[in-house]
Image (tube, rainbow, N blue to C red; front, side, top):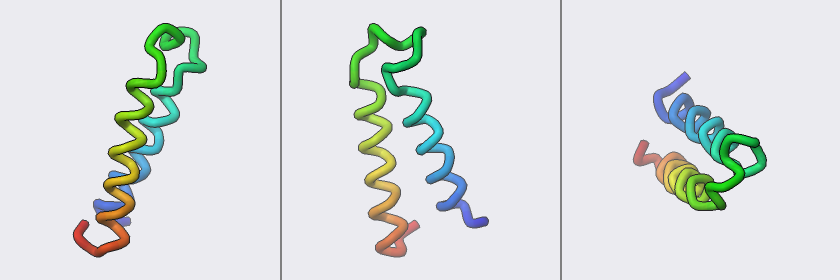
Length: 52
């Protein structure tokens, strides 16, 4: 596994963990998941372009 694949897996897991459906994060709103989602999109774009 390359470093990019591991980074992508970690970011996807962080996105799932930041969703506001969990009881501990219900008052957070969509801010944390939006930020992590944006990071996932950037990493996917860099991975596809071969920069990562």
